[in-house]
Image (cartoon, rainbow, N blue to C red):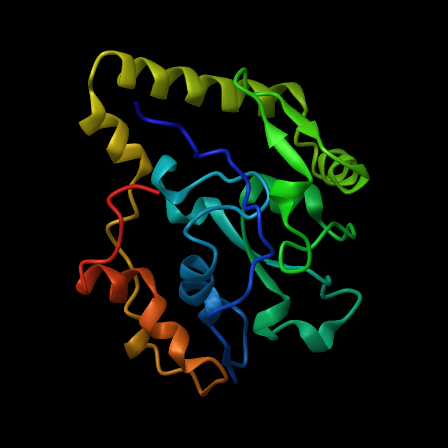
Length: 202
């Protein structure tokens, strides 16, 4: 029996595996961030694979540029988020997935609604509007679609939604001016795929 885990938030704090540095603007960090955060929005878990365009995803400055412009190109201050969550977050101070395990704070239920598991979860849901009607309907729609595919035995179609994107970046060729976590390249999705270690779905 296939268990749908697409809306299961990570139960451990995200530890960054990449450490590129030295770019004069933040856009060159995009490919690193895509891989860093598994090609999905850190806040709502929407995946690239569910969108038509990669432009649906933005680079978010956890500490806003308006507050700390000196952190604008600091990799550890950057997150990978969908356009919707980036717009909602704006300059708000929200929980950091690199400091708090979101899976210990919130849980998505079978009907697509989301519940807080503690006060941090309440804050996360409130600030990012993770329980507004459109978001709940969005999750419900996907969950019902995936259950229908599974119930009819159409696992091939289900796997298409759950697989990694085809355009995995070759971070070994990115040649960042500096990199404090070079070993992370070996753990990138493309590197794992080349070794036969990347799962078909995630």
